[in-house]
Amino acid sequence: EYAPALPYHLENYQDLGDLAGASLREAVLTFSLALTILATAVDVHNRAYTRPFSPLAGGLAVTVGILARGVLCGGAMNPAAGFAAAVVRGNVINLWAYLLSTFSGAVLGAVLYRSVF
Image (cartoon, rainbow, N blue to C red; front, top):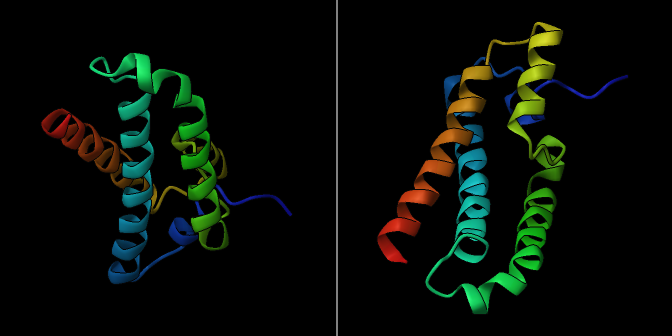
């Protein structure tokens, strides 16, 4: 048995409501990871204070993301790996939702970072 191409919660949904909920969870967790990385590793205003802690903050964000969605989807954190596995397995029915939710979560994190920090 091998791992699914997409996270479990996006693998085989036919119902649009379930797919929307799964996409929202994916977007929220990607948003939190993107915002954490932008606020610690990329922040130019407080670089001297936040830069030493950016690996810890990024690692904690990844850990929380894996713990939060590990039961739901196996803790997939890399959209490129999910995309490649979905294409190789030929399971691309809900790939658009996974890529859209990941991209929108990262964009919303960047927009919030630019507007607040």
